[in-house]
Length: 464
Image (cartoon, rainbow, N blue to C red):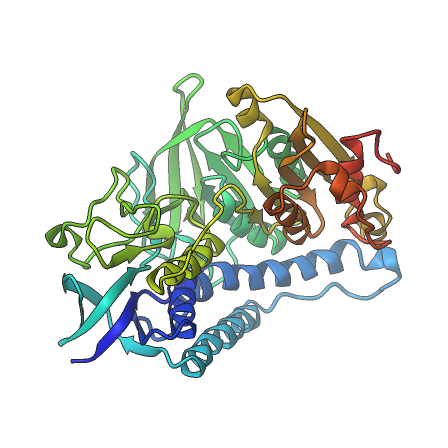
């Protein structure tokens, strides 16, 4: 029986980061993972492989639509789907092997198998029981079922994000249930590859929770790219027959029933925390109504010495949120002051253009009754963006009306996922729009659009 200071259950971004940080802080650490590779959902069947396919399909789009404009003449490339999937798998392999290397470098033991917690201070993996002064649950999440619908996932015709990453062939038509991040990213991939994509969403706006102006602009852009949207529709069932699927749904506005046929149906209605098989009930670890693990302000559960982080607990299901919690939880266990600023956690959608946001939306501030002002700048006024056919979209900065302090930012445009972090840093330091506006930004860069939005919060942007 091995004895550890910390055992982390789960090797996704939250788990492996927590394990490495614990080891760096001098704690004898092990990480439990039953997959053949480390990295969890994110590296194996989530963030990383989807970005590989988004990149590959975007290159195809550029070749088909923009190369000739730049004087790059020739036949458009043909898609070798098997090779594209092989490229995606190679990217996965490089990243997962990288985590394995980091475990060895930091002397983190990989306990191969699925873990359970038979009692406080004990973790069972296979037939072996290991002792740990502290246990961190980082078991992540799984694709959620379609609410109130008869849907049987086979990962061939009716798929989750996992199956969508390894289809046997590019479908002629795909129906995506859910207009959130996963649905729109994977829908974009297949639309670029020539698939007819129809997105069915229960709500009246895509990307729930995002800035309303961004939602409208984003939907228009995706529609222009060929995606079809059916909004305000509740899916009731998905039936498969003869290698095809039929999706039946009701429009909420008039309760009329409709159906549509597809080669593949992607269920992308969010994710649910995964805690099966851990034995939490017997331990006395409390769960919320949504099945998330309840924790205190220091990520500790109702049982002393057992902590939980990432998708398994409350908050946005984002890899970087889990990483932050993993590092902070490790700091707490080591007797330090671990901290996560939940007000400054960015969200990104990796379509083209990218969409990124951090902090408050206008809608939230209106509900709070807080006085604010908005600075907005279009990428059409950005020289670099126009040079690379990426002038669509804008930067929208929201600041306190009295103090000028930055409260939020919403970007739709080129490299939005990278640009947002300037505002994340600004918000961490309590910066004002004027602070951002007075900071020299290199020319020509996309980042100048952020500065211009900050200038728009004052006397006005220069290039608008």
